[in-house]
Length: 296
Image 1 (spheres, rainbow, N blue to C red):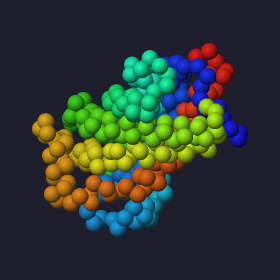
Image 2 (cartoon, helix red, strand yellow):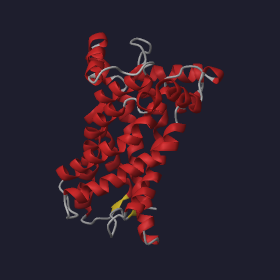
Image 3 (cartoon, one colour):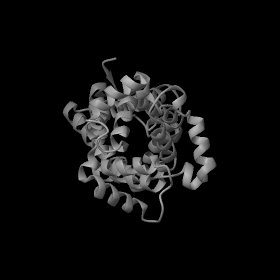
Image 4 (cartoon, helix red, strand yellow):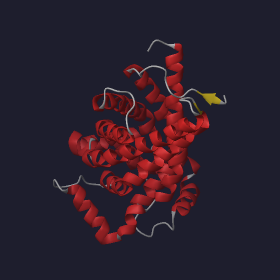
């Protein structure tokens, strides 16, 4: 298919957003998981453990096998459909709250993205926490816990708040600027292509580019916060005190310096392009199909 009419002819319903978001979430996981594993290990490995992202990939494949790059995929595959469905639905609702008119400014779109990011954190936090704890296990076979064991251990030892929902508030703090940048980047690029073509219908490749720009905007806006989140969610014990986010920042900076906050950034940017692009293409094409072929 050379082109897809990306812009829907009628408003997106909540049900259509939920279904389309599920397709977008699944596409994101399948495309981006190997580079996400490299990113997580770069963020959380002791300083000096690896020479860089390429060394992480080589050592992981050499010692654990190529499938180790897909560690932790079960958690987002199970949950990311719901996470992205909530994200897209919250975004659609936030846009309506911000303005009753369909033509929002980029600033308004960004604000709607920030609201949506905060809302979907309630699902994103546990999904990502279990993913990170799976990715942070080195070894293979019997040396690695299965997802159900990781979930069971966290709940048994720490309960719901300090176990299952560990890192919730740092996830909220991360997602607000992240999705502001995500949607602003995507919408700006998409509108630029629409202006260039003189029509709301743009080629699929243009949606891919717009999604990639959105992904880069996401990580540029939040990456140091993501490093802090990974450390908190992978730590053996729950964080202590109301200021645990600030305290974790200080500890990382004091012990490892400012460079620690950008460790793993290069594979993250590389991953952002295909992962975010596939998310938006899958969402937009699913939405187009639903609106053309159903009454949803």
